[in-house]
Image (cartoon, rainbow, N blue to C red; front, side):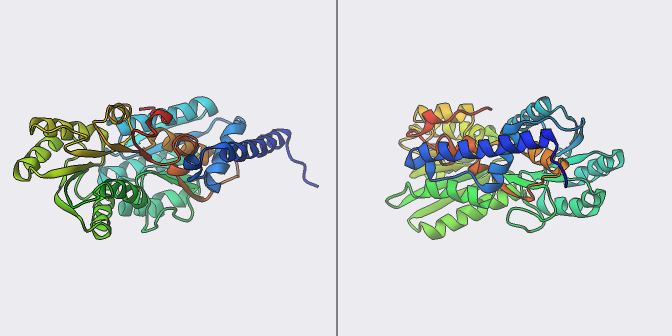
Length: 357
């Protein structure tokens, strides 16, 4: 007969208790918050984290990230730091600075150094898939991926300890749908997104094209990349409003970029939020303030902090012999489910949401 170690037994008991508490909390939520429920994979990770048992030894983890130097990636780094502080693991950053070529080199270096596990943010989906198959999988060590899906898979790639995303096609579709459905009568819309050629921009463009088919009364007059830069967004929307002063909706994929959108609207002598509605992305502290003030009509929540934190927890679960081996939709984490119940943050629910970046 195989005995269960006391630590494992305590962790299992705590995990079960956490699940029961989670179910009770979910049942007590108002209907709009119950619209989204924590997924089984997310629930398993939350239960493990709630139990909070220390690992049997100090693990070394490689953080193979596509970036560390913008607000989103810095917030993600803070999430990883918080997980490291709680569980006592060490991590080393291997930054690709958004370059698939650079990421190939740093992943090779990381594999050569040897780590207990890898938290992998691909710089691009297909090159990332190649690195996963060629370098990471052969190590036999657990790998959790974050940010984007790989290998043509819609979310989870088999063999990974877990995949966590918050800016996938479905998330962008929900954001675009929310903006497009605001046009109850025919309207003209301008859109600004991230970097041309990036997977996120491809998802964004796909969502806009699908939105045009679903809402034929919306005319997308301008659809431009703005590189997540408020200065570029300012110029693009200034030009758009000069050529098409009857634009009444602007769709932006990043709150900081939306600052430029706001400036352009004001410079055109119009009032943002009323004369020209702004639908943004990020649900950052800035974005939430703008929503509450009525400047942004809505912003879509992204969860970089939770992405890295729970990505690390999923990696620890695999190291502990309890891998999730599944997709974790960050929109179904308690951060969303227990607050607004939706990733769309507007004036009606902004008071329920607390951004951490």
